[in-house]
Length: 577
Image (cartoon, rainbow, N blue to C red; front, side, top):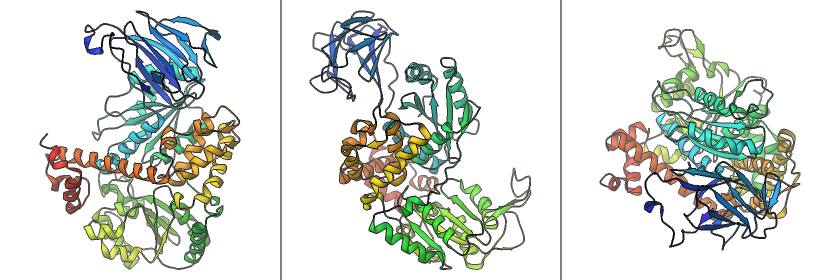
């Protein structure tokens, strides 16, 4: 949404007497909620394109749909011969005075009037909320802060609009966000603190739902917590959505990890790159060597690991998976190797680790590049000898486990920087498989999109049964930094947004429409990652009183890399500002 500056004859916000009530138009549409202040004594034209003063991303609006006029303590909305008109209380009106709290429907946009001494809290778009979630996940992995995604289903779309204000007021002020996922479904990002005395995220979600239930008795929520339900924004969203749709009598469903076990996502392919990958999988399955799977986040590394296990002579034995980035260093070794009773505080009984559970089978170590130095040394020993000890144990335990390691990071560069052991890389890299990014196999995009649309029709009762040519063309040109997992979430959200029988361009995320070229989207993603990294390093430096060695230790980053990135992002200069 864009807004023109107020006319010269109107007073600016700074010129208003302190505390004087201000008139706001809150515009709720399927891509989010925008807030516009009405100039005192003036007017603004609202529409879908310039020369309208307020441009809203809503194809149901006319180019210049309606004029919004300040009327003291109310707003006058005037229809400008629009196609879909201005609807108030179910009837089309030519000119109507809206008092604070009253609403009108303009195309697919609901206009609500607020009179306040301060601007209503701005509500981000779905894409902005996911960007904020990505930043929270970066901090969660490095600084061990908590975060979660909460989906809130209301009884109808109108109820969702009414819940925005009370839920926004209930959110915290340190990173929590609220946005619109789809008609009748809100989404909230909840950010936790490292302090153990802080309110648990699940308790905060329960409190939000209780506040929502006071306005809508039929409200229901699903909470996906990092790392319990997933370690990426796409995975958390998928887990929360499935939990929301699962039969459950409780008001708040707790999402579990979604296992990407759909072998068809690998086997249904038209891409030469994927067909070559499948041939490699067949050969690797029977080779008794450790395996290293490389690929971007969401590209299907776990699918490859499962495919290799099911095709191998070990298929009748257990397969276990762990995301090495999702557990703090203090728990990782106990999770991998188990622990004896009394080994540490809280170890009330002996626990068998994943290596013992996977004896005779396969153990997948996802994001192996995130392993701490102590865990790397312990893993190297078990790979070399087939033996390990439980934490707090005195006896060696022998196991026969095939290790499949996976990562999106450049392990060779990590070895050069001193962040990963070279001898461990030699042990893990018995066979290497690289999973192609989705943008490298565009032949599969239409096939996968059709599959995900069919899933949405079955699971969400979505009305759309097809994707029109223009929308499909955008999907095929986009760079897909989140790969297959991102494509699934985009298609399934578009199916929830679509009002007709097919998904159109307007149903796709704004960011995808604005950056549809592969090169532009890939560059945009790179820029976003660099911004997140710079922000994370800046925060660590500030918390370490600008001691680079201490900041590097907190982020588990080689000091040489820290020094280089401080220079790259100009963070040393920020300190002096």
